[in-house]
Image (cartoon, rainbow over all chains, first blue to last red; front, side, top):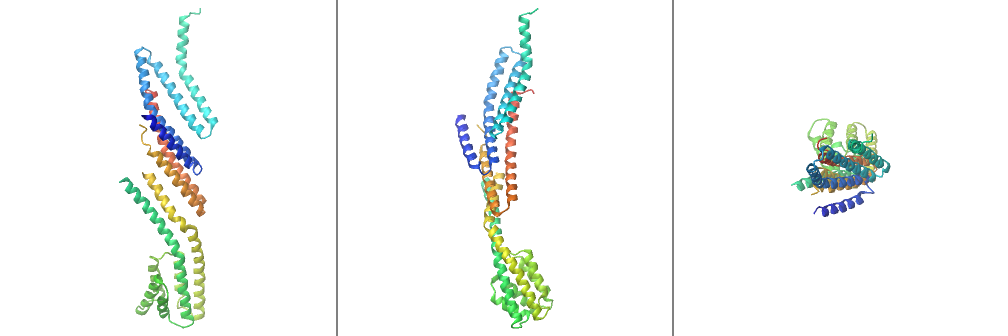
Length: 130
Length: 170
Length: 68
């Protein structure tokens, strides 16, 4: 069971951070970052399986692989933006964290434009205006 | 295997630190011994008008262990060799310093003093001995201060740096 | 499996040792050396963390952007 490992590593790293906080705050912060990164590396394997399921379903349902790929990229960007903004937020730089989230949202929007376009085109084809 | 290596690294650094702190602790003692030896030399030369060779022999009898060997060999070589006093003195000082916990400056003081030995009349000689003693006194105070400042922490510093290196290599 | 978590303890050990060296050097009156030791310790730990970050990003790229 992975959850026990995650919880125990979290507790251990919390204790280590408490130990180092007042003498070496920079190294304590790096321990926090390292713990977060370990958790994410741990999770990414499970996410991989879920995504394989999603792509399989998409192929079975005859959806164009372009759409699936775009959705996966959007999920990836949101994950990375979340990680980055959380790490920066831990260091106390809230404003930088918000900027990272904002830039992530903008990139997601840019990736979503082709899908949105095709959606609008489909709607226009369904209801011819002129 | 990994742990044995880590232990070796830690122990090596620890003993290096301990050795450094031991040298720091021994330097004031050695300097005091030298000062005593020069005081005896002054008494021998000024008051009992002994030759350098006799004076060295007498000092060797009265002074503590590491220095007595030095003065004994100086007096022996003066007795049997026909070279300059200063040459013998310098060679013996060089040999003595390989084992002593003293710095290069201390060595220079003693060497400079050896140059004046036996070159002047008694009044001048007394002045030179006094000068060397004053120099040694200054060095003694300085070494005591150094020992108080760095003596205790250098051992723990060695241990900590050993642990640091071991952690890096682990 | 979470991989090799001993690095967490290693970094914590480095941090503790660096903090102790810092205090000892400060006690000796060598402030500039103490500062320098802290900096070196921080940089070493930073190297570990950067390795880990690049590892994570590689994996995310492999999972989400498999053709980009």
